[in-house]
Amino acid sequence: MPIAGSGPSSQCALARRSLLIGLGAAALWRPASAQAPLPIFDAHLHYSHDAWERLPPKDAVALLRQAGLRGALVSSSSDDGTQKLFAEAPDLVLPSLRPYRTRAEIGTWLHDPTVVAHLESRLAAHRYVAIGEYHVFGADAELPVMRRVVELARQHGLFLHSHSDADAVERQFGQDPRARIVWAHAGFDTPERVREMLRRHPNLWADLAYRSDHGAGGRVAPGWREAFLEFPDRFLVGTDTFTPERWHYVVEHARWSREWLADLPPAVAERIAWKNGEALFGAMHRALLTSATR
Image (cartoon, rainbow, N blue to C red; front, side):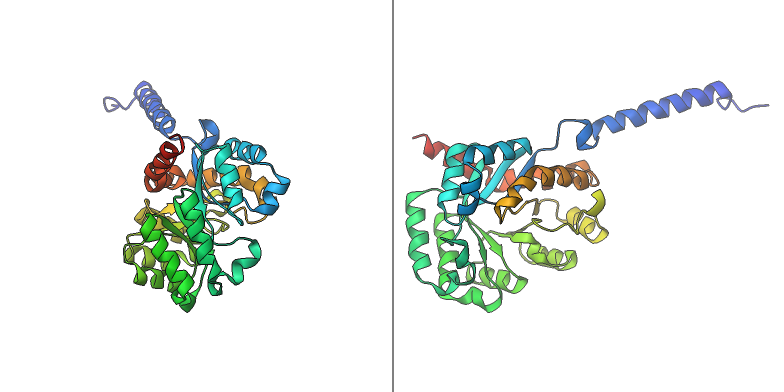
């Protein structure tokens, strides 16, 4: 004699109910391609002289909007590129002051005291949310120019966008324990090392620009998954348009980012995609816009 509720009709009803529940759950989180694209805050873009010569500001902004960006942290060599792009799209572009007047200064800026005067003059003339991206490694973080950069960030309430090894990051925090540092490319370090640094420094965030090991094939690698789940509020995505050609990768990079982000819990994906950028820079951006309209 069959047990009550175990007959074919009951089993069909149960199957239908399970299917409806599954569809309802799926509706809460579908891949970005099946719903409005997940917004992206791109925390690592450059618009240097060779880029604006080939890609006018209107065209560059069109690419950013096509990519579905909610915000874009932009620096350039020289700073004129950042100002051009900010003037074109102040609602989208967040200016960061790069120390380099030309790209050739990447290897010399730390030994050039005139860089300090350049930074001070730009800070007097314009508003920013960060200083960087700049390159500094190891003990070079103790050089006078770098120390002045840390001081200027503190004086103006700005983030530091540091392309550095862990040693240089540690040294910058040694100069100002309250500094707020975005670690470019997550230091090109291992997820285990990145987690160690994030545990040690609550004012350290990491952008994932120009690396693919965390999301190859649209899947989050195990070590990175652990890092993202432990620190969902400490990572940002970024493209790194360090050459003009990279600008034409902005849209594709945003699409790829949405693919691997969809492999994370929705709340974590949203934080890394755009909410962390909004939490870090949103108030500064709104204040910057308010001052620009006065």
